[in-house]
Length: 337
Image (tube, rainbow, N blue to C red):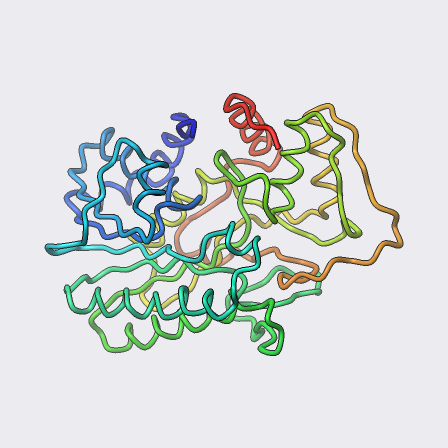
């Protein structure tokens, strides 16, 4: 896989430079580094270490070491973590392709919820003080209102809908984090992550924006299924990494922060933007077509007021620029679907 753009890694380091410097000499335990988020986190930490001489020590836990080595051939995972650690970032979840292929819901639940409980037990046993749990906006369930989703909204996914397993599991995982944090031995911060775009995003599974990019790269019409009316927002990955590192270092313990873009747009609008950027035709459905069923609901856009007010976080890469960067990266990689 083509390396992540150096300019994007540098941008993430620049945005959170103060927080990276506070991690000087840290021994970090990370999970979930084989996937989209993890690759960006790991490579940005390496970039920060090189630029700022942080003397970081990173230990990665992977349930698929072969896949990890394939994605990061320059790194060498150990058989099991040993020694002491100062920080943990727990980002492990089920593989996106397994979800796309119809993974068993109970297996997904156990991987996310019980996996988090085991990581918490590991952190407590090793005396690791600071932990970031990479959660999901799926904890809020289906939303159809016009307002962005706030951390204090009393909403939840429908427990009778098997399609909400990720949200149910992330909620349970957050509860385990809250219980562990209440014992006073861990300072746990939670990032409720929404939707994202950038280099290395999978283009051939269930991500609408990835499908639009794949159409553009193949020179096909940018095709919208359903009504195209559900509203989504996409934060660029260099911003995401800067936000996660800032929440880890400066976030309040036992607090959840929404992470994402507030620039909500209908999917048909996003498709039209990709079509314009790639000079491909746009294929829209008939207005009367039924809306697709989705656990994210008709509107999946966060309010990030808490992160902005408490941590000074902001979105620096507009959607148009993020799409251009993603198209340029994947075109250079020679992607075709």
